[in-house]
Amino acid sequence: MKKAISIHVNGTTHTVNVDPSTPLLYVLRNQLELNGPKYGCGLQQCGACMVLIDGKAQPSCMYPVSAVKEQKITTLEGLGKEGKLHPVQEAFVSEQAAQCGYCLNGMVMSAVSLLSDNPHPDDDEIREGLHRNLCRCGTHSRIIKAVKRASL
Image (cartoon, rainbow, N blue to C red; front, side, top):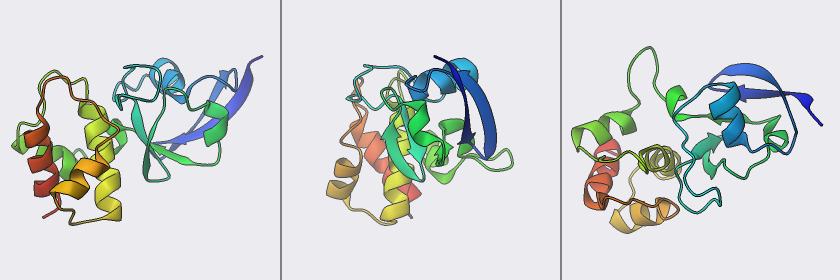
């Protein structure tokens, strides 16, 4: 049964009329028309649907929308300020750390979360911080360079 649920996304409160068990990803993409988080595996194993929930990277494909009513959600679209890219986004562009785009959302969101907890990670800490994200194209070395650039 559908209910009116208010969620706080990218600094704005939205009220959506959905079944409370609807995955957050579906609400973000279908009701709010945000295209940053992607549907990948639907099993919280690829990272394509990653968002920040109260600043921590979380997969959104199986996270029920009713579980985030009191939390702040940030998507890829909400990272930049005043028309400027977030420093992690800028670093990914500078290092050309994307090919097909499948993993890009999750890698960026995970990197933002990692750097908020650990502003100067080493290579092993970066790998650990991104371990929930799959990259089909094998751009891992450029992704690690991008995270390091953003940490400077």
